[in-house]
Image (cartoon, rainbow, N blue to C red; front, top):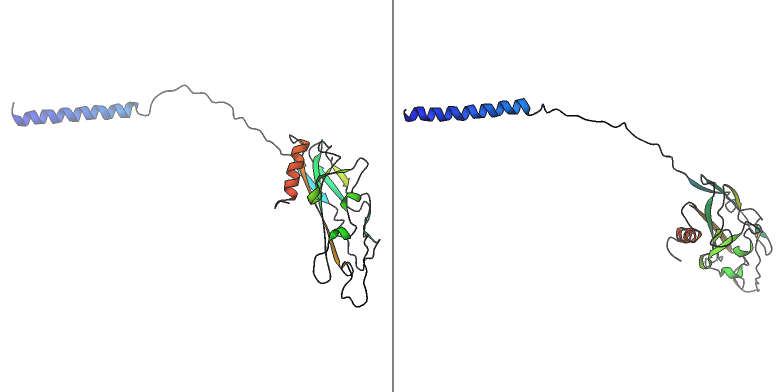
Length: 218
């Protein structure tokens, strides 16, 4: 047998092997058989609850000028909140009062001279407010950290009136009164926050609500 024939035979053999391999790939590559099973699709629709809190705008409605000592600034029961929640138990509610005063010349006034104190006007007798943060005048609805939460409906903030109870004197020749309370501007601000009661203890609620009402710290 010549060398040429030997080479031809080897080449032919290689081609035959490759051909057999390709046929095997075509025959078995995509035709494996299986037993399979399919479970029925399972899904659920879940609806979340809600926590809502509305103010009646009792302070925003006040436009008083030429206020004199013993004048009523906010009427009793003039400030209310409305709790609206999907929780039957209700929600924890907190409020923060901020009182500032500025003299006619723009300088700040010591508010302790105004005779205005949130402690004296807040609701009581079953609708009390627990003072959670004395430094920032923050109160939680109830009587202590284990307080009952506020249920859906109206919550009274002040059972007593806010009364301007100050004393000041102007003497001839002065550019302003002694304590600068005459012709001063007083601003009373109330903020309110609410948090769910589910899975939240009274202590935790106080901590969270105080944080919400003092985002920049004391």
